[in-house]
Image (cartoon, rainbow, N blue to C red; front, side, top):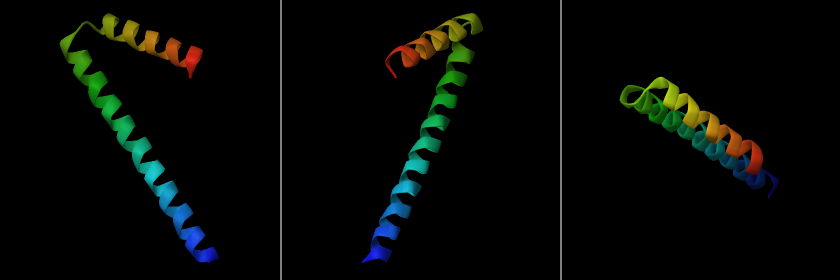
Length: 58
């Protein structure tokens, strides 16, 4: 039974890694899109507001 638990843990870690990597790629794409469609200073201000929200509520 122990090996099944180990396999389940490995699968869970792999799924979490995949989600983390995909979410970072999505964020990078969104930031790049913002940077090509609005002034960089506006992108920076928006990102700073998001970071402040994460610090406060995250």
